[in-house]
Length: 259
Ligand SMILES: [Zn+2]
Image (tube, rainbow, N blue to C red; front, side):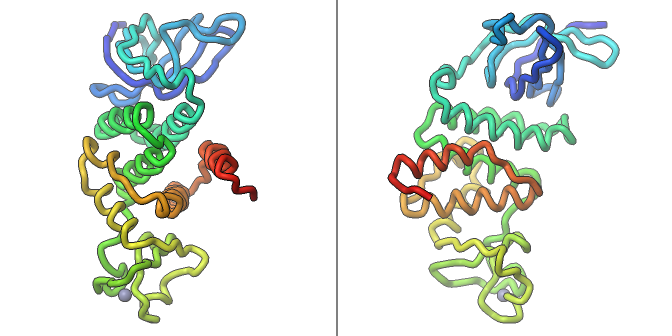
């Protein structure tokens, strides 16, 4: 029986019984901590003020028989734009779903804490949170060992010199146009990428967290990057993430594109 005090990001809040919730807290010292919090929900379903989605806080937890229970919490960073910005909130909610899908199996993964700190800051406070989220999710799966192969042809390793690259999702990399290489790719898995987006992916993979979320690309290439990031992450995670779809639909609607 003991108490621990730790700082962490609140990644997920799941309602439990009438007034309780289960919290998933990402900490730097202990990795992911799942704890119960009693009597946190009010009658109208809202949460007490010291708990809200994605806050960074100092948590005091009670540890007993392999379980954690929340004793108190003190918010350090509210990420206040989230309270009024459904777009940024949806972006973080999507990213936390992806991050939790990995943390569930590797709760002690240490690098994820720094990733979340930089990625969430950039999504909450910087311009174009949707693009930031697609950058962040690609960086995240790369860190987990699913790096897209973009330096040369995945099969023959020849340098590819072209304006538009053929990225084969089924192989996880680009292929040159030699028939002996292309025969390894499945046509339905091709995503076309301009040279500028190949460079953007290269920088994203190689730059540290402090810099990689500042990558900018021309507006004409933004949709291409987003489509690649979406299909690539869904492919490597073997899951269709859907939370961001509503935002891209709204974006098209605002631009006057109806499908
Ligand atoms: Zn080749």
